[in-house]
Length: 288
Image (cartoon, rainbow, N blue to C red; front, top):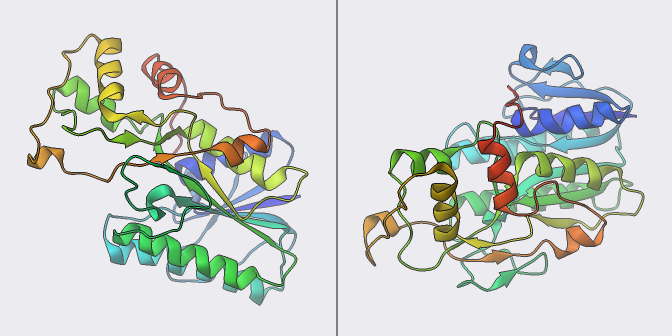
């Protein structure tokens, strides 16, 4: 069985290595294929502008594209154009993979005021990032409707892990500020996110079309920052004054992973505490 990873960056590479370890042939599309490990056959492709040439025996497709920058133009080029070009390439070569998984984000949900959101919650994003991702999801679902291909949107929370240490760096440098109002953070370790991709695309049962990919604990940002400060022996970050500019940020919501858990998926890092302790201990390797 051949697995195609369209957008084989850090997350895609980790997933690709796991597919390869399970005995699958893995092809990774990216603009710098020479950076991929030997287990993944790298193929050059700029998915935002062109139709790649695909292996004819592709059974699983993972679209794990990342935007070059945090602008609407970059998001649209990566996610909408990227998904369209992958689907057009499959159609051009008359390839119908068994499953296509699109790596989306919990940004598709609006601020819920701290309430729980799940796959049944309406996607009503207020920011361009979420709006573009919803558009890409709808494109995937529309283009695969009535075919043998099972589409999956995996809405990941904030990914942390090797090479993704922004919060650690902020706490260590003394630049971290705890929000004045409670704000939950929905996180997932990079390794668990990659394991979700493999699990959902290879499990025997037919998958649902949408899964929320977060760990077991939607923790308050202040609790995460205090934990990191304690683990690193750093001073506790100060709390922002209400209305202060440093208190600006995404809204407050708590994402549920119950549907994912119901498939039998098991986390290596079920909460931020296990994940950050492993990261601080130097576990894991950052992939290119």
